[in-house]
Length: 67
Image (tube, rainbow, N blue to C red; front, side):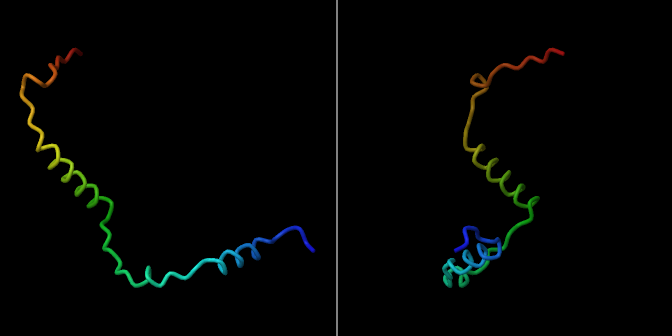
């Protein structure tokens, strides 16, 4: 009886133990946006959410620029 398992034997055991998921194969693939388009969409969503918050000028903190 040997005490060690080779990488090939471990890989074969893992591949044999994984269940087959036919439901996952039937789902349609979602179109993915490129990272730039995704970032633009995220920014638009954030801007739309922030536009709902109204702040009075007296609520905003004073800003003094001192070089």
